[in-house]
Image (tube, rainbow, N blue to C red):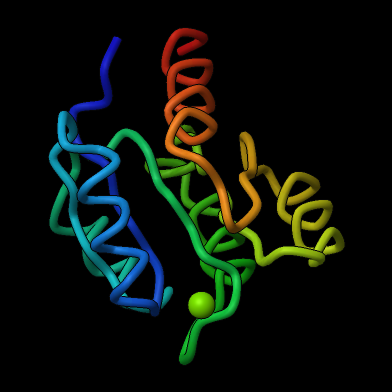
Length: 123
Ligand SMILES: [Mg+2]
């Protein structure tokens, strides 16, 4: 099953462009910090996958993840956390807080697509 809509939450415009190139087959919704991510989720009830950065202004990825998991309507949406190289603690924290998977920057196209396929096949 392919995701219907993927929410990308990342403060790097470059990452948004990369995701657009890597995920041509998926409709994307864009947010540049956690608060904006929550706004986009409120507007797009058909988002069924979230790609989440950790370090962002206003509301970071772990705070965003906690808010999503605390909301019964959003808690089931799988979240893939995109962590900075070397930030293994972030990945551990994200998994402990309910993230479904993580990829480390820099990641290859196949790594990301593989993680998405595993998650959406299991759904
Ligand atoms: Mg960032």
